[in-house]
Amino acid sequence: MSVQSGTGFTAHNIRLDDGTFTKPDTGLIADSQWFLSTRRLLRTIYPDGLRGKRIADLGCLEGGYAVEFARMGMDVVGLEVRPNNFANCIYVKERTSLPNLQFVNDDAWNLPKYGAFDVVFCCGLLYHLAHPVAFVGMLSGICRKALILNTHFATAQPSSIFAVGELTVNEGVAGRWFSEYETGLDPKVVTELKWASWSNPKSFWIRREHIPAVLKDAGFQLVVEQFDFLDGSISHALLEGTYATHHRGMFAGIKCEDSMPPHGSS
Image 1 (tube, rainbow, N blue to C red):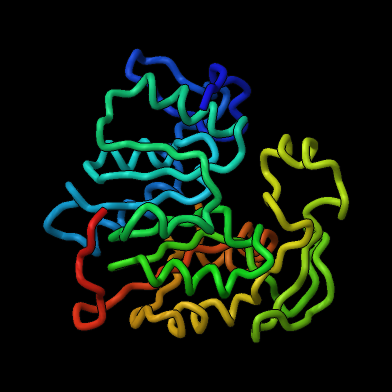
Image 2 (cartoon, rainbow, N blue to C red):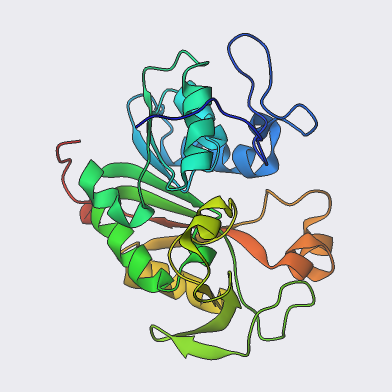
């Protein structure tokens, strides 16, 4: 695939090997609370070290998290479906000496094509899907140890920020539909929407209380929600701050030793 040089980074400020940055007007992704919280969880799951552990970064956008996972010693596959975002991933790949980092231009639903993974990192993607429960089930089938979800969720009360619909049921769980773009929109226009869903004009936000059950039903025996990514007072964030207003959290499903599938070919 022919790609142009990466331009117009919208979110990920990545330090490149030559000391330059991809989005210098914002904080480094390596210093972000989302990354630091994920790193703490990974080091807790693997106290003996992360080198050689295989991780998939789904909908990796501009590759920032994937780069940092590779710098931690993990073998990384970053999937990004949009050509414009993927061009930025390749731009980053060419400017970081990380042989354990791979980017592929593909839909996250096609992840099984790339083998089994010790960890699947799904940050900012689940709430862009129309069938998130089926997606989690698919991921469990190729995930040996842990699935990490960073996602928006629905709540009992309507959102004051996001234009989500009424509470309803989809795939057997409660949640709210969110309009990504108009039905029938020109596919070329959809391709350019860097932060929207890829193939479904509506996405389903699972109600928060159902997410742990979705993970457990998919085969993850240990299910946790992580709060250390919240800045300042956690209690304030939960009651009045960003968690309460933006309805976004970090969840993890972890497979116990007696339930993990055997290591397959990568």
